[in-house]
Length: 113
Image (tube, rainbow, N blue to C red; front, side):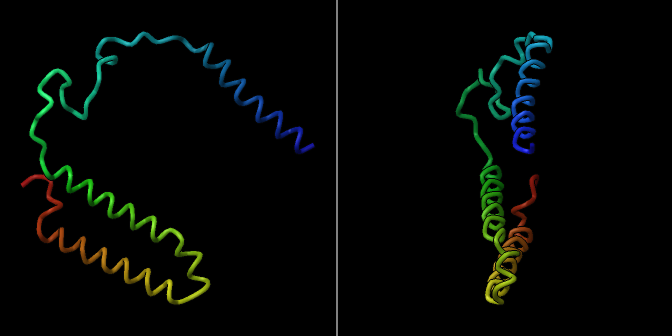
């Protein structure tokens, strides 16, 4: 019974969504919505506009802390097995916090100067 119920639900949901999509009113987008949006720059102007290095710095910070999350993700499972994982986790968090404090004190995180 569970298999039949699962199959019925998994076929009914897409069918309902397809039917709803066909019944929904069609929208007519205007020219502003059809124009390309290029990260806040007008696509009709010169493509060689000067870009602040601050954008790149924020992107590097994002990648660094994104990598930190990827490295710390398996830690809860490793905590049950050894204390070495806890030591490495605390060392990584300490080094990243130290680096963040240094960048903050140097004013790298100030968006406007």
